Length: 518
Image (cartoon, rainbow, N blue to C red; front, side, top):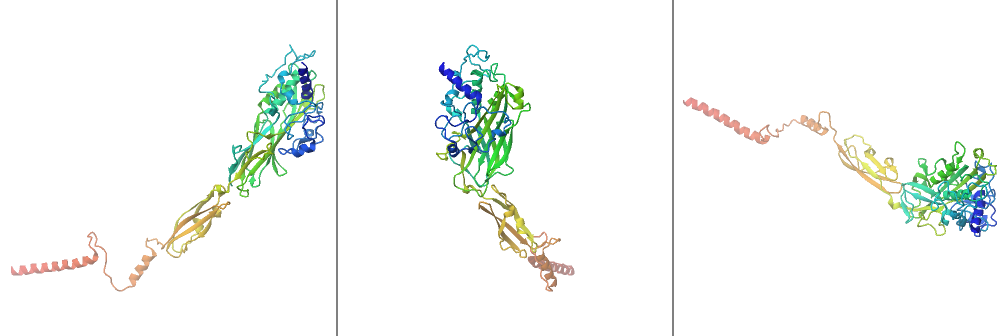
């Protein structure tokens, strides 16, 4: 019973009153001072912040003094640094003198002490108005105190071997964070509120009466190697997190995607609505489609896209709808608490090439293979022209395309005209060449044929010249060719024709002689 009472008391102090840093003094051993915490955190940028209990806070993230709940006072009864801030400390929160994991991970040990007049405690049993499952809805292992993220490119998380890309390739990047552990944190806090000695809190009638006013922000920051660009045409989308605005920024040369909670129209959520929403929030992904591997990127060496994911959840719990709407908690049953985190690289997506001392860094390592570049495709056509006719040889280029560089038609060069002379009949072989940005070249050849000019009467200039020469020559030349329909050549025709004529004459003379004798 003493252990149960200890757990109840600890949870009451922690879960009801606060989730914000307090003084570092008295924390469990292993928690570094602020200077050490800032220096050792390589997976997310954190900075000193004296406005935060504990003195450190994720850099660039929404400050609590800028939250919509800024007019409500943060609870500071307990000491509770949020998760992912320290290099060698794997826990969500600390309390003086205890390892809070032991408290958080055993919700079934929280039993009623049946305080007088508290309707939450009946028959010495805990209450479960939202039907939480002990096995899945609460923190059960120490690892669940962390938040994990990953970067995937073209669907590849690159956890087995270094990926390979090529110049001109378009990359689709998915930058994700698993927030299911955050839901477990909130569930265990809620569990302590409705089953612990918290009669003064808003959770009455088995925890179903209560309101939440919240503000929250997630910040995804990408470090992209030189030569990898994000064109204006690149599409950015977010999945897994409804009712958040999306804003792209450039922060210190890095690409930042800021997700800020959109406030409810009515200004609050009921307890039922809040915890139903938490169950829906699992994996949140920022997708950037259309990153381009440019020709200035370093080739054949390991390159890394690195990122950080930080977030904060600021909430006001109250049993007053008016206070929830106005967001200025002042009643005895009001409590404002804030959680923030820095995500670490998930073990499932960890790069094979990551440094052994940088295991928490969210990264995607790859190489750009220069030899993987494909040569352009060049097409050219042949042409036939009349002698003396002008021809622009570049007009013979049909197209020049490159898988990486696109249309290269305007970059085609004539490297050999083949001795082309428009005034000289003949055939000429001309050669064209095009080179892509990565140095790959392609040539294509065209055949240009120059012929004698053809007139409208179907005769060419050469025949006309021959006819003119024949008209000026007084020497008669024998007709040569073939007699029509005989197959006899003209030379032989004259010979046989003469003999035939002679025979005819002899025949006639013979007939006349016969007549005279008669």
